[in-house]
Amino acid sequence: MTHTHRATADHGALDDGPRGFRERAGRYALLPLRVFLGVTFIYAGIDKLTDSAFMSATGAGSIGEMMNAVRDSSAVPALVDLALKNPEGFGYAIALGELAVGIGTLIGLFARLAALGGALISLSLWLTVSWQTDPYYYGNDLAYLMAWLPLVLAGASLFSLDALIAARRRTP
Picture 1 (cartoon, rainbow, N blue to C red):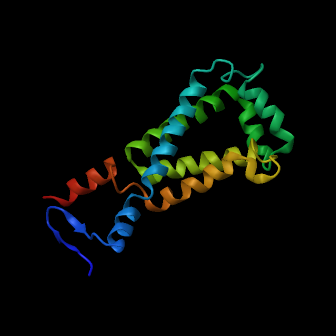
Picture 2 (cartoon, rainbow, N blue to C red; picture 1 turned 30 degrees about the vertical axis):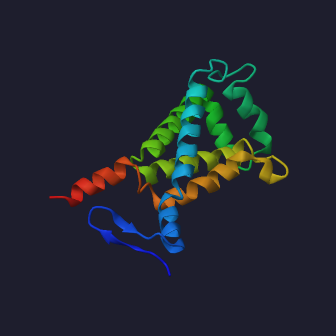
């Protein structure tokens, strides 16, 4: 005999059986991924913005040096050439983009758009910086790209400003 608890207006659908657990787990499945990617991208953006060596056109550890180093081994050298026109500007664009994507993802504001931004950043880094990684699965940018895709598709339905805004629009 299985015990189920009927849904109420105040509590939503609850089912003490395996099916109910799977449904609840399914609703929360993307939350750890969202938190991880949000925190990671916020950290990456802050790390770049606070690293004066990175935000330079030349010198050890600079964005300019890194772009020059990967130029001939990237899948799309034209992207690297574009970055090399203004390495500091590109560095700031990446850092601020990572920060915006991370915050949007973590708080769930424009979550699909933030995830798309994260996917595009990861794609551009995979095609340039980590393209030469052999075997390919050692490069983390491809894994980040794949991690962003479920959030592009699903958005942030729980614990998000998007959900709060949607709920307020539904209530008269």
